[in-house]
Image 1 (cartoon, one colour):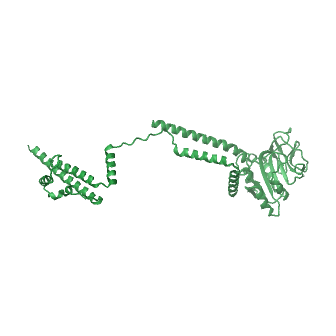
Image 2 (tube, rainbow, N blue to C red):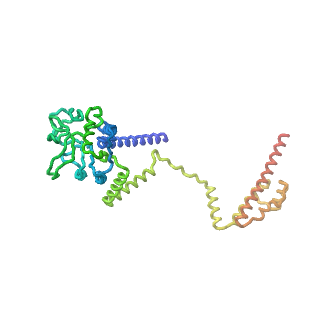
Image 3 (cartoon, rainbow, N blue to C red):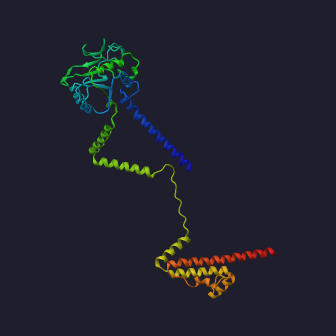
Length: 390
C-alpha cells in the first residue's frame, strides 16, 4: 500500500509539472514573437540588434528609450535642437496612423520614422527586390507599393515607393502631416539583412538626416525602466480594485483562501490511520483514584493503605506470610533476619500527614525493601553453596 501511494504521488507531481511547462511555452512563445520583433535587444532574424551594433561602430549614438512617449516629449522640449524617433512595429498599420502621443512630438519639430506593414495594395513587383539608393542596393521583401511623388519617395522602383516622406493633408487629421517617414516593411534593417550591401547604411542615413539625438522606441517592445514598471503595475492594480464590484472581489478572496486551505491541509498519497491509544486500565484506575484523593485532601486513607501494603510486602520478605502480625513480632523477625536495629521499622508505626514529609516517608519505606531484598539475596547464596557441597 505504501508503494502504491508513492507511485501515485510521483505521477501527480509529474503531470502538474508537465502542465506548468506547457502553459509557460504557450504563453511565452507567441508573446516573444509579437513583442520582441524589431527590438534592438533581439538577436532573432527580425530583430535590430545587428543594426544597433552597426551604428555604434560608426560612432553614432542611438538611445534606447524605455519610457512612455510623454516622458520623451518632456525631455526633448527642454532642448533647442530637434530629435528623431525610430519605431519598428511589426503590426499592420493604417495609412494615417502615427500614434496618439506622436502628434505633439511632430508639432515640436521632431521627426518620426515608422517601419511597419501598411495597408497598401499588392503590385506585380517580385516579392524579393533590390532597390538602388545613395547608400547602395537595399533588399526588400514585399510586393506592396505606394504611389508617391518623386520628391517624397525615399526608396522606390518602377512599381512604386517602399519608403517615403509623408507630407500630405488628410481629412481625418485636418492638418499637414510633416516630419513623418513611413515604410511598407518593418524589416528594412533587420538582423536577417546584415550581409546586404545597403540596408543598414540606408536606415543609418535616414535617421541622421534631421540631426539631433536619435531615439529608438523600446517601450513598445515591452522594455521598461524599473520605476515605470513599478508605477504601471501599482496603477493597474489600484485601478482594477477600484473598478471591481465588492461582491466579485469578495468571491475572489474566498476562492484564494479555499485553495490555500486545501493546499496546506491535503497531502498526496493514501491516508494513514492513527493507531488507537492502548489504555492500561490499572494505571488509569490508579491515576483516577489518586486524583480524587488528592483533590479531597484525604491523606489518612492513603497512609493507612500504603502502610498495610508495605508491611505485608516486608513480612513476605521476612518469611512471615501475608497475615498481619503485631509490630513486636515483626521487629523480632527483622532483627534476626537482618541483624539491624528494630528502630528502623519506625516508618511503619507512624506516618506524616503533610505532602513534603510524606515523600520522605515513602523513600524510607523503599529503603526497607532494599534491606529485605539484600537478606533474600544472602539466603539464596547460602542455599546455593550448601547444595553444591552436598
